[in-house]
Amino acid sequence: MRPRQAIPIVLAFLGAASCAEDGSAPAPPKAPRPNIVLICLDTVRADAIDAHGDEPAAMPALARFCSSATHFIDASAPASWTAPCVASLLTGLSPEHHGVHGEAQAPALVQSVMTLAERLKAAGYTTAAFTGGGWVSAEMGLNQGFDTYYGTTSEAFTLEDRGSHLADWVRTCDRSKPYFLFIHTYEAHDPYGRKRPPEGYDDKAAVERVRTYAENFRSQLATPPTDEMPAGVDGAELLTRWRSEPLFREAFLARPGVATMDRIVFRYMNATFATDPRRPEIEARLRARYRHGLGLLDTGFAKLLETLAPIAPPASTVVIVDTDHGESLGEHAFVGHGRWLTDVLTRVILAVRAPDRVPKGVIRGSATHADVVPTVLEWCGIAAPADIDGVSLLALATGARPGRPVVAEENRREFGATGDATLRLVAVRDERQKFIATYDPRTGLASEQLFDLVVDGAEEHPLPVGDLTPRGVAFVEAVARVRARVESFKSEGR
Image: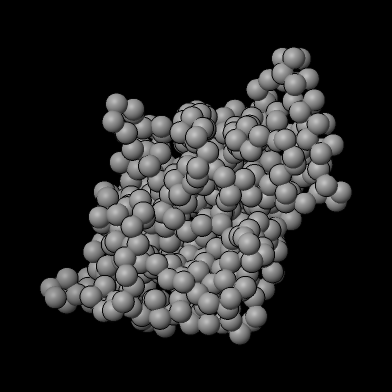
């Protein structure tokens, strides 16, 4: 209480020159608003920074960043593929509310939904983004509020080849104002490994082999192409090459196209991969290729931090690193992402370097992408709107509140004897447990699973759902909301 009592005495001593025009005491000076750098590393598993036995961490530079930052170790994504995850990261909304979601496709963000860039620009920030395009392209509506947005369906940013665009922006940005910089890259995304230039382009024999395979494959496709695997095609080879060879992937971009090829590969995984005797060999090869890609990404990440160093002094810059979703490398007989809500797909890395603004170290307690927007707004002294789904992480980081259950949702195409259907999955997760409801429109019924993540982190042994009361009030309430959402699916008739 003493410092508060001393304030009027000190102000009086300073005299009238220190007072406002109406004679009242002036407001204390506001702390400068920090620069905000938000880096989204696409398709990076949460264990990319962990050592595995004798194998060191695949991403040592990222591991060093996390160890020097505030690491929200229980963070998870609101979906398991890019479009809904990045939309949540930039809006503070769940996929249910921002609408950028679907089964392997997604509509653009509508202009009525405000982005973090729009809110910061209105507060006087310079805003810029450099993205890998695709689901994070300007055409997806994510450029709302950015003064500069590099990343379209035809021109994309990568860490492997940063080009002059980001360097030019760093050199010429207005340093008299705080800035918000968003960076996104697909380096770890399949096809795993180096993408530019694709491996094999200089090997004429390899190019010819891929060309011949593609021609033979296309000649066996139904017209128009369907999800059926062409007769005589080896599904194991198709899966392995589709996920790990950029040259192979490029051969099918025009026909039958990525969406159709993805569905054909998924049909093989759905029906055959789990029992294929070559599965261990396939998984080992894909894991090695994925790890190779993580190494390339890690090198690029370290160089990116060096590039930003001249304009990002730690005392005045908050750097947030987020991975939008993970990747399954054979777990649950699946390779890739999307369609499921297992932890290998939804657990993410979320780390914040903000010296003197938040305690450094590992923070337990569930968090999600939507929490980034209100956290940044709080740092910048801007009131977060009441209608967003995220909650500022600052109270969690300081121990003022525990983590809260977070929700994720996904759509999965299922092939079966009763016909094909798009199943709808909704999950609620905290650091100890996960509940998943799966709605099947063919039957109008929902199945439920419960996992104890403390003893069964691989989610291989579902528990009886039963009475959830021992799981805690917050978890029970979140499950009730998930069940209500499933009921809404039934009323929608899909």
